[in-house]
Image (tube, rainbow, N blue to C red; front, side, top):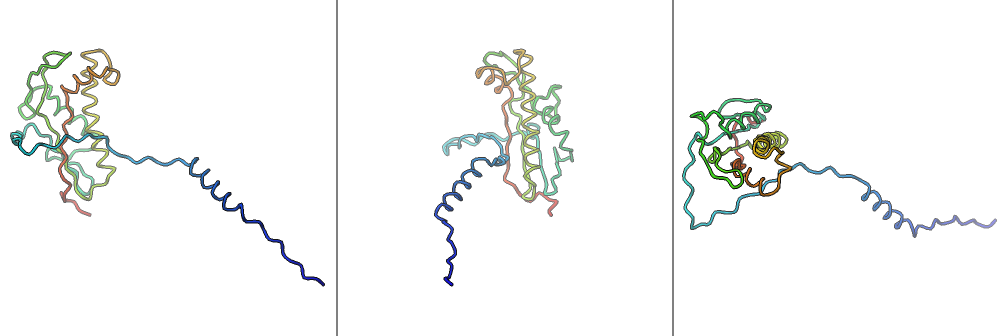
Length: 193
């Protein structure tokens, strides 16, 4: 009897098929986008420029996050749900309280003379052990405070939402409520794991 040879499979096109499948899965798979913050950093201060004058304590809203993701606002514990309203109260100082930023009249193009708190600064510092989700949640609450104040002013002045205003009017609103969030280098605040 003659020995029968086993037929060989033509594997020449296998590499092509594998490559096509790889391309197909790469093109049809969706990727989760990373969370992040859209922040534009200020330009560096020229070396020959004098340092700015010290900031008065009443003009600084201190926000700390420890390693256990606990929020400390103005040296007092605060739930995250109350941060936005506390920040709005600080930024606007609607009742001109002595422990909040000084209200001053400024001249703003398009709007005119308006009373605001131009020296209000929010100081944010977190612990090295703070979870990124908590850090983002705090940033979102602080940004929401500015966004709500800007929207309220846009409604009062122009009867429109801030997002619907033209660039020139948005710039005027931002001049009244500039977003001033100062972030310190993370450190070991306490409550380590």
